[in-house]
Image (cartoon, rainbow, N blue to C red):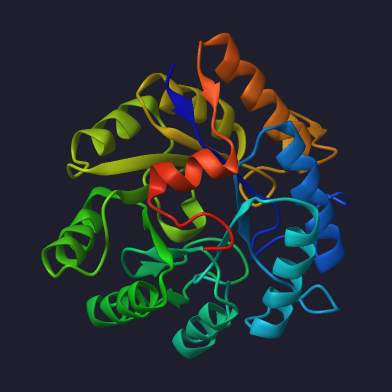
Length: 281
């Protein structure tokens, strides 16, 4: 039976408790959610940190505290953001890697924010900076999770592969429906098209925003991909009903996966699949 890797993105860098009071912001909250999600079947946690006021931060000390608290509770693979959120500079985002996660996200192109309070601002990820982030990750033994929001971003994926700045198996996260940053629409047709352009020797994951999260992560399972769920991408359990925890979203996805005949990868199995050293090595 094929193993499914479930990632949970518990927090994000945009909305907070004003959107859903159950969204975790502080390290102790994130660690508790991590443990609950691990018990429901998650193998990876995607981490965004907040300061003590709930504002996004790139302080590696806060990330290290989150890591410590998670690691005291469970063996989840820790994947930190390098996108962070609005207002962070490229150098701010690079500082996050000082916390030495096992994995880190790497956005595959520059995006214009088109909605919300930050509409008109630019999320800068030029080629030379993508290469710099990838090089630092590779030197530090951090697995890059390449985030693709549209077909055009495959150009940057291919550039990193050609230059040997990412290691096999390549890990690509297809992000759909994030209108805020100009991502391609979250439709089955768009997802299938993105899958058609995947490079060889890769594992792909699907993240979809809002109400599209459940149908497109389910389609990903059927197409041989992995899945990401959680309140960073979707604060609802169903239309009009706020999720009461990230673990609730993980549990539903795991239940569907098992009904489809898939086995759920443990963190240890996911490390082996992704080429990440076992804990303690």
